[in-house]
Image (cartoon, rainbow, N blue to C red; front, side, top):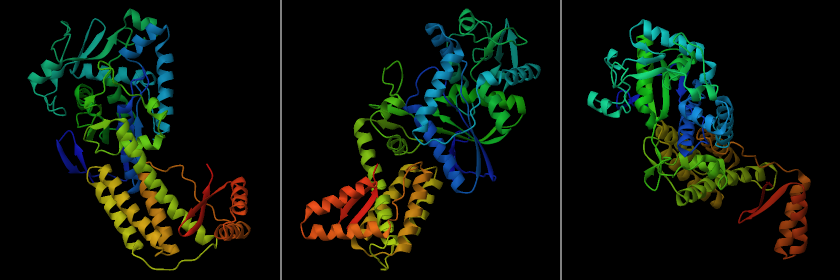
Length: 469
């Protein structure tokens, strides 16, 4: 499998052991999560699922930043503690992404790792990479010769990105590892003891500490949105490299932005689209389909038109799975038999090969979706022509369902049940009444089966059924 590595600036073959150690930056819990957070969660959940499909055990860690400037500010404004704010929005985030079928992971929090963070900062000071000024601790950027390698920024670029320089810093590029407590920190109860006085951690040090604690160094994959490349991941790499003396991450993977009308979502533009607002209109799996409809390295444009298009595509795939399943159930229930031979087995084999080829090529999910739709078109034609047999149908169903599950789709699909002889005889009886145009008796049987929990589907091939929602 090849992935684009931000550190090397190229798509490269990834070499992984049986156990893959993966860290993805989570939310800063001060507000409801938006589509940018959703895209990151879904992309790396899909990568995890695909690696598991390929036989790896994935140890997946996604942190939560529960102590931060923005969290403290909101806590002060609302007269609450930092913990009340972060607990609420972490819970809201989990509720949102659960509806997107994002699998559970290890979720360390900053506030639970203060001792480890203090220890790491102390080591950086002892090794000459950091210094303390009046209770604040800074990482001295010029002390690390390869700083800027991840983001690809020059010294001039880095100087431009630093705003509000602190005259106490040795260099304008230096960044905070520990922040001395201010009045608002005390108000938000976001104050911790340290050798340098009361305060709280800077943003970047948390991920260096938590990733190494839960995954060791070096670990395999570090994920996040591309907006984190600088300064967050650049600084994280610098801290970890200074702490351990080796490159901390083998493969840095970054997903691109979700855009609204061609512009990146931002509070300043007032165009933030929250996950839960979209979920009021669309099923979570449809939103997940949308988030996979463009390559993770490309921008993704959100609009109602785009969502409607994805909804239709999603429903077509789901209907195809259901159509195959209904034919299997009809045969196994003894409603009819079909032992014809077609090229469905060959198409199913090609489906699996083409899907894997797409996913192996830098997690190309839009191409993988296209492969699924190409197969769906073919299998629908084959079923319509009635040139198939049970073995072919069952194989195509399980393969299609499995590949969709790698993308996190149709997780809660309920199989079409096999009916007993009594119900099958009623269905045959109803077909007879329909041919005789005795619709009153036919409808009576339909209603009876509905009471039993089955919805009848009239097709050109005869009556089929599924479970009523």
